[in-house]
Each structure stands twice: as C-alpha cells, then as structure tokens.
Length: 147
Image 1 (cartoon, rainbow, N blue to C red):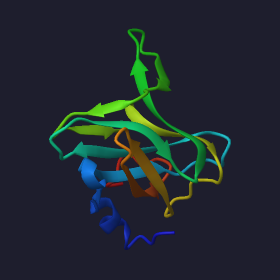
Image 2 (cartoon, helix red, strand yellow):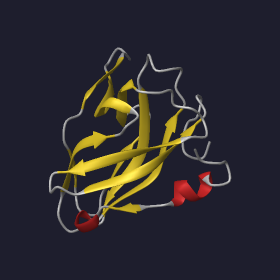
Image 3 (cartoon, rainbow, N blue to C red):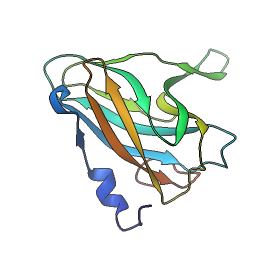
Image 4 (tube, one colour):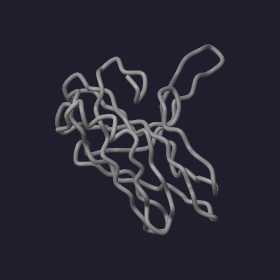
C-alpha cells in the first residue's frame, strides 16, 4: 500500500526495460467497485531505442485476464472495446494508454482496486524483455495521474 506522500514520486518514476530501452511513465488506475467489473490501467510507454519494440502481453496478480484493449467510437457515437493485440512502438515514439483509447484492461479482478494502494503490472515484449511498473490506484472518478 502506498501513502499519499509517496504518490508524486511514484508517478514521476520511469522503469527501464533492459535492452529494449522502453520507459513506462505516468502509470495510474482508478479504484474499482468490488471485483465484479473489470478495472483498467493507463500509462505512457516510450521506446528510447533504435529498433521497433512490440508489446505482446500484460501480467499482474491483480487480474487473471489482463489484456491491451482499444476503445473505438463509431459514427453514431457508440463506443465499444476490443482486444488490441500486439502494439508496435516505433523508435523514439510514445504510445499513450489513456481513457477512451488504448488501455490495460484488467478482467477477472482477484481483489478490489482500492484508492491509495498500488499493484505491479508487467509488460512483456516480443524480444523476451519485460518491465514491471508499480501502478498507483487513484480515486474512482480520477481523470489522470495528477488527480
């Protein structure tokens, strides 16, 4: 569990993914209402290397089915979510995981996501590299890591 005093430091911390030179910044999630509905996590994933990097999977002990999902809105204004599959991050590019777009969908929660706590989220890449980021859980109405 993280204290409110540690939250600003955790949000500013980057995590390097070894040889893949991937940096994960500004990770956050919203508190959940119990475990019956999925949760979501958001972040920025930057490729600091000279070669494309492909995100292939997510892992966390918080949910048994974490996946990268994409929200899309059709011409009638109806939004839907679906698995996004592999995400290629070009050299020197940043992919934003944010509400209304790409996000880490946390299905089959194993425990409620409680404001003030954190959970580890591991990103796995096609070259076998992994990086784990500690994701702070913000309030249920949070709109970003600064809330």
